[in-house]
Image (cartoon, rainbow, N blue to C red; front, side, top):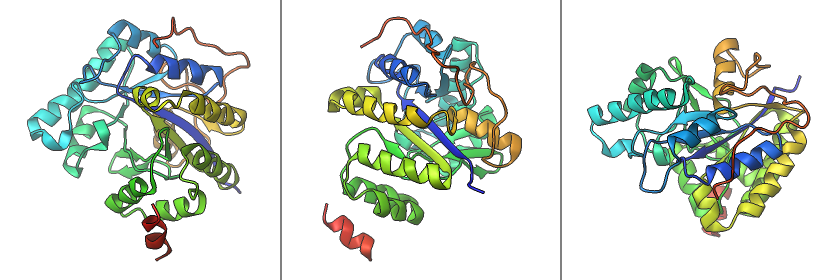
Length: 288
């Protein structure tokens, strides 16, 4: 029996251009989790706009001030983590179950304050993974598959090396020889459809703008949308809640649109979002 297949997407930093991503997701009946800080060096959406977004998509916490947790003192980190959950919930009037450390910068010592704050899962920036969220005590650690951004092979090599992610390296060697994120996404998704696993696309809307990747993102969303009715298309929190409820990444329990959209939305579903704000491995990587 083929293991369950999942599609999920997540988007970091709370930039106003997240609404362009949200509208594109909605057109293709895809779920999204948006990790939003209260403030950051770049512009962030207003509380009113965040409430609009939360009516259809999941909102995750991203610290209060987009801080690098590894550069914060332990009390500062604890305040940023717990405070971000409280801020998201106060702003949206919805439960916040997911946390993402800015730039994926965190250490194992931060997992305990993330647990104590009441989060179910923490999303990382581990690339080219098809794994379901992994248990760390009663917290689930969620990797990603493809970032919606052009990367050279050296970037992937560093990502794998930091995490000793040999399985991810093997998957990349199998699928990523073009070094093109769209081709990589297509190839890996077919693997998920055949073998099961979690396909997790993530990115930053401001980065998509700077790199001129909107048309390519639309291309990938169109491709993912073709298969959204054949797999479990869930938010990050929806997948973690399903695993917590069943003990495995199997058929998930029903989720509602209040932060955890159902696996299949009805035909023609369109949310109201308001106006848009606009040794083989070593030799392989030496080629980059």
